[in-house]
Picture (cartoon, one colour):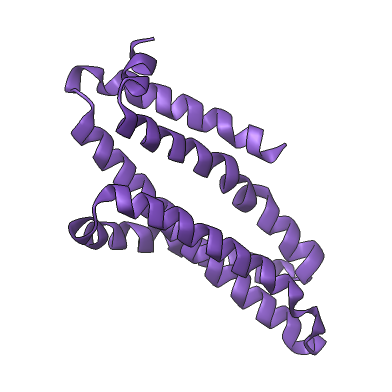
Length: 168
């Protein structure tokens, strides 16, 4: 209860938690299930290309971690969080646009879709990591030390609940 009370008692903290929940609700299902289905059913990649796709995707967290420090030095975390969500929306649209490449010659279609989907996915995953680091940094600045465990526990629980809700 104290963790919830702390979150709801601070507008800035509530915004950070709500953005984290929204990210887990909207974006996690896309990468845990959606991209796999799209790559196999719509794009028609082989098992080898799918493995390469997963490898490309996991470059995102490394890139996001490296970018976060530089971005947080120059941009206030509130602005950064908003920019990340706007960028992620635009990148999701670009990923969806990749499926329109069916008009391209079949030999180039799979390559074009593969590259566009994977590059946008890499960027989205990198921005999610940047947002996560920004949100955690902001929480550490806002939340009193004696409430940190409770607030992070509530945030983590709500974010974990958002994932299966987003997959439905």
